[in-house]
Length: 154
Image 1 (cartoon, rainbow, N blue to C red):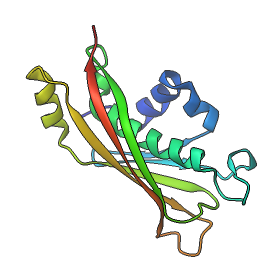
Image 2 (image 1 turned 135 degrees about the vertical axis):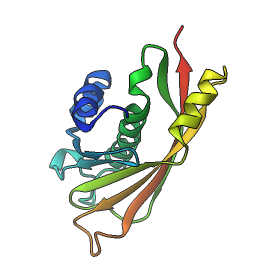
Image 3 (image 1 turned 90 degrees about the vertical axis):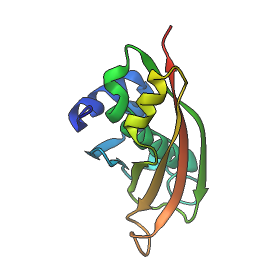
Image 4 (image 1 turned 180 degrees about the vertical axis):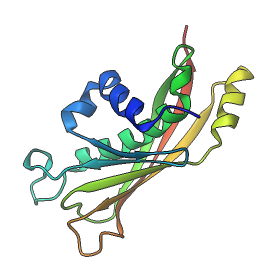
């Protein structure tokens, strides 16, 4: 089944203190998606009044990490999830609160099967970011893909 929203929301800021520093809010977590929110605060804005690109990136990467922790958190004594690379496209200025929705592109069971077969799996998590302070909040203001691996612990 995996870790639930409360477990991930408690664990991730402990594992990655920067998540707590950013003030990210955990909204929803299921098998198919993780949803996190970056509140609109002056400290995360850029020089033109929108959310800073680094804050938006951190939100997206953290949403992806929450979904990875959901699916693989029960295996942390054997593996460490690591982000290998990330790409982001900023489509519009993110104004107001920003919400990131992360979705898996791989079957978690297949990822674990690769690990059990002795290979180090790599898989992508796609993230769509939307802002509530733009003309059409349904339109993405950024999209990103984070490539992850599960590194066996030594």
